[in-house]
Length: 185
Image (tube, helix red, strand yellow):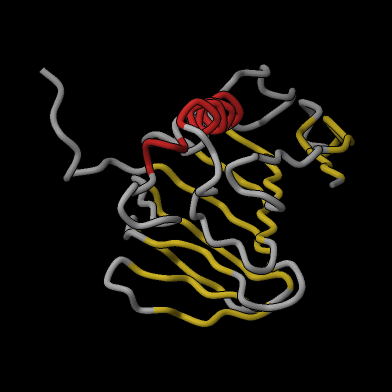
């Protein structure tokens, strides 16, 4: 997917800071899913932005003041159920791959409810194509189609695609303080 980043040349004029391609991340744990990590900051920048941020291996979900922007393509029929044929060693390898590619992602998921996760973020989601559903923690499903927008405020949720074409959505995650998180000593 093409990414064009525009900044300020220092005189109040816009200039292209980057014009490149972002390859999708794929995971054995989520066969057929594609995740495009387009822009990630762990703290808000000061304007003007006149250069690309340094490359870092940021956590997948933002901390307070952090931002994430990207796209997810959910393939038809994705269940989040681990393959029953996988040995414990193979499952550990699949989970390790997910953690290596998307640090912190695994900790956000509820092992008792496949696909269900919650984060300390306000998520802005726009469905671009396909039809899918968002399952909430109480088991309520919300049907979604192209053009629908979701503002998700840290609640447990999961994304599913019951259609025949990929369910593609764009997301912007804004990290916030989590009053329910355990306090550190």
